[in-house]
Amino acid sequence: HPVATQMLRDIGSRRTALALVSSPAEGVAEGLFGISASLTDRRSTDVAILYLNLTVYLHPDFDLARVLLASRYENMNRYEMANGIYSGIASSSPYFAMTQVQSAINDGRLGRIESGIQRMRALAANQPGQPDVWTALGDLSRSGERFSEATAAYDKAIAGVPPGDRRLVGLYYARGVS
Image: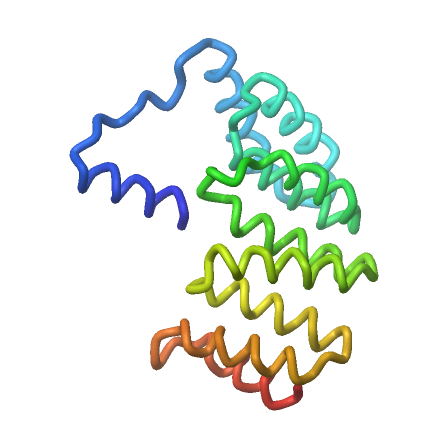
């Protein structure tokens, strides 16, 4: 998890942990986020989206709330809305790479495969060691019937996954059908 990784780095460098909230508005945002995260059934989607929008309004830098909000839109097949939410996440955020991958997948769902491929190429140039980036690039390339590009992307994804990892089965399959 990106935040846990960042926290471990902070602990290793002996940084003082920051307070979870620094204002009443952020405290309310945390509470609304907690409620929203617990509302997982389809009947609660509208309420969860309302609370998540309030959360982001009260605490604009709450990237995890943005991720959850975009995910709710994706569950409703509103990929354009989800990508709009993802675009508000700064490149310095620990969630940035994950949201860029998800945005590229959404581009593919919207029939904008070339846009998704370009997004993944840019991310792969900055983060070449991320197997998820290469996997998404491979999937999008395969969807666009660019089979040699898909195979090359899957090769890089496979190289970044430790031996014995269960993701390898799916990667080898995807590579094989490319």
